[in-house]
Length: 410
Image (tube, rainbow, N blue to C red):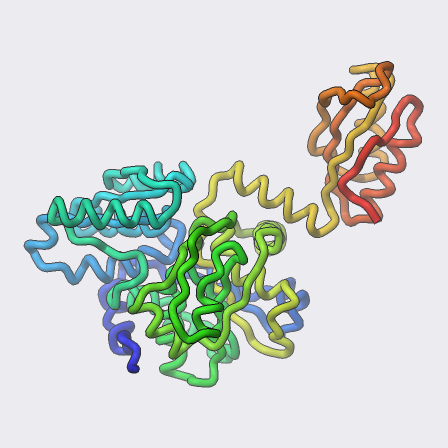
């Protein structure tokens, strides 16, 4: 069965997007090349795109093709956040009224950004599928055109312009890693890259808690999940649909699963080493590179960092988890004599060891605690497990301090 999107469709989309979508940078990363064993790694930074993700490409390409009557009737879309902003900005640029339905898990930052582009936002449903169903009902009732986030030839062609840019910026590319939610981005990127070089390996990446593409490819049939559970809400889809499935089954070589903790490590390393903010979904390809499940030894690998729209509090929590996974962050429960007199001693001991004190607070007393001591929770960042163990040992050596429990062991 021939895939529904051609390289000609993608090239036509690039013409429509000229002056609308940014040509995002490709950042070569020695850090991720060394961690993965690759000859080189290029980070395609779609988190630098307008609206903070690649979604403006597909949304604008689809909406620019609407008839005058369809434009007058307006559009409606369902989204976990990034497609929402893409449709909203496209509507603003094209003069089309846009209504967006988002699920309850959508970060507040994405909702406010969508409203900032002039769209009406409706929050409906606990997961994306419920929001999607509501949007379809609204489209039928209002006559608005539904702009699908991924299962649409024009949307796929627009996303494929990422692949056209990769071909020009990274001609030596051997493998490309792309996150899969509904499959629109990887379908477009694969179409663009394979048209120039059919030896390029196309690898999809999904979180374990929303892993539908991998079993779909393995069984050669669409698999739909009954539920999803992942921090990567941007790719928390339960399935692909027919259009993206036709492209993926023909043009994607394999799918790698990553855990939420691996995603947190990728988010952390992108912030620390690449100096870029990525949401968990956008960091998925980098998580795959850092995992043991993808062999890219000696290859030139592109990782599409597809979005950076994340609440700062969520980003902080992800990076704390990532640092803990890297053995560079720990939380310990202490029992101390004298509160708050012990604060100075604890703070000085951490500083003397060259560690960073991230938090120090009085905790809740437990039934088996020594009644003459005060429970204290301390959170510390260090350079590695040995450094943190040494810092906790230094705290335990202080007069009147006992370490009751610690999260870093071994």
